[in-house]
Length: 97
Image 1 (cartoon, helix red, strand yellow):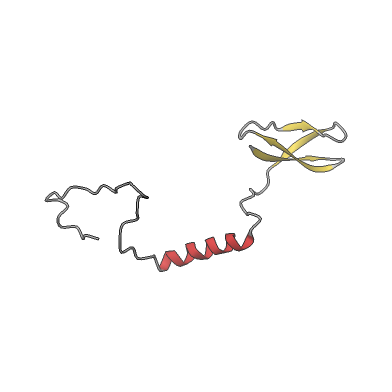
Image 2 (cartoon, rainbow, N blue to C red):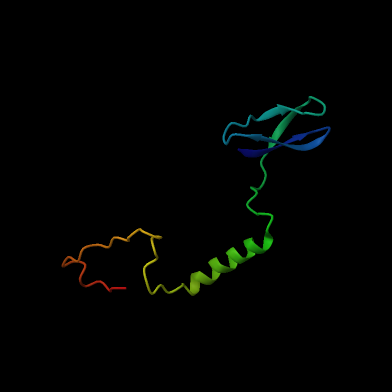
């Protein structure tokens, strides 16, 4: 569900939840019944936890210039094996972990 914003000339802005892509260009205002036009606003990408958002941005910026070095394959979880490619002449020249 997406949140769409509409503006009534009398009562101001209000929001409506609709499935993505199904919002009409105008709806009736819930308070006065007048036709209200849809307003294109900035998407809400911020979460309520600002420190988590800031940490994610900082981590992404740091990884741009200082990527993390991986020294081993990640685990697949308990009881699961990670399959690796068979050694063929074309793959033998590649560095091994």
